[in-house]
Length: 85
Image 1 (cartoon, one colour):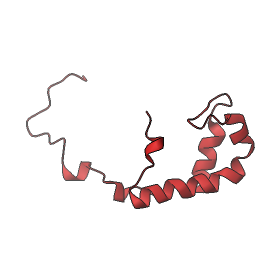
Image 2 (spheres, one colour):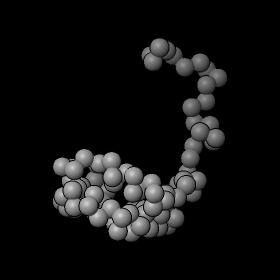
Image 3 (cartoon, rainbow, N blue to C red):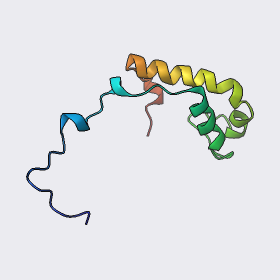
């Protein structure tokens, strides 16, 4: 049951359960390519660039997006302008 009370010996914040940013695996061009390829053609991101355009040029955009994501992960920085939920 999802509402069961946790047993007293359950440690929900064990150090092994925490995954600091330094342990994230960098992404690959293939992963980004597949994510962009799977997205709905009518979807739009914050840039308001039509997803159909992104999908048509995914082979050119994937390496650049991969580089930006990986640099963000390595540096631990994320652009403030993209911090929207």
